[in-house]
Image 1 (cartoon, rainbow, N blue to C red):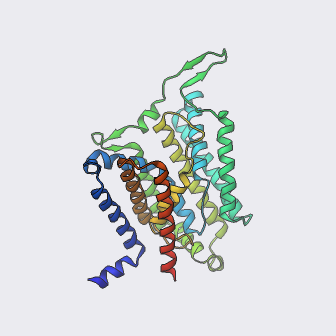
Image 2: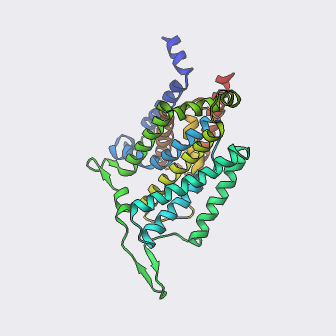
Image 3: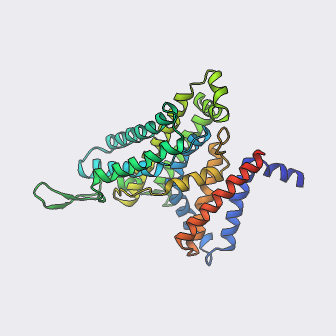
Length: 329
C-alpha cells in the first residue's frame, strides 16, 4: 500500500489531489466556528475563484508552451472598463460589446504572442511590457476614473443611468441561488480549454513546443503560430474575466485585475503544470484553482490579514516549483 501511495504521489495529479485534500483538512481544522461546513461558504469560494480560474485557463496554455504571461491582470482591467463604457455610456447591445472586448483581448494577447514568437523576446519581458501598456491604456480611456452608471451629459449635468441588464444577469445565481452565473462561465471556459488541449491538434502542438521546441519545428509543427495562438487565447480569457469582473463590481475599474497574474500562475503551478513547459492539463489546473480558492477562503473566514494571505500564496508557489524541480531531477 505504501508503494502504491508513493507511486501516486510521484505523479502531478497525485500531488495536486493531495494538496487539495490537505487544504480541505485545514479548513475542517480551522473552521471558524463551523463556517467552513456551511453550504454558503463553498458556494462563495467557487464564485470568488471563478474570475481567477478563467485567467488560469489561458495561463495554462501559455505555460505549457514554456512561456509565462504577466499581462493577464492588466488585460482584464482594460476589458472591464471597455465593456462598461460600451454598455453603460455608449448603449451598445451586450452581444456587440462582448464581441468587441473579446477581440480587444485577443489583439492584446496576440501582440504579446507576436513579440515572443516573431521578435524572439523572452516571455517575461514581452508580457511585462504588455502589462504596463494595457494598464496604461485602461487609465487613458477612463481618465483614471471608474466607469459607472453616473454619466456626464454634454450640458455638464450628471445623469444616473440604469444598470444594463447584462450586468445583473452575469451577477445572478441559478439552482435556487446555489450557483453563480460567473461560475457557470468559468466552467464553460475550462471545458473549452480542455477540448482544445486534450482533443484538438493545436493542443498536441502546444505540448510539443513546450517539450522541445526545436524537435517540434523539425517535425513540421508551426511553432510561431502555436505560440501566437496560446497568448491570443490567454487574451480572450482575460476579456471574459474582465467582463465578469465588471458585472460583479457593477462598474469598470481601471485598477481591476491588479496582481491577479500572481494568483493565476499560482493556480497553474499548484495544479502541476510545469513552468518549463510540455506538461500539464486542464484537469490539473482545476485542482489548482480549487486548492488556491479554498486556501484563500479559509484564511479569509479565519480573519487572516490580506498581507499574510499574499505572503502565503508566494510561499506556496515557491514550494510548488521546488517540488517540480526535484521531480525533474
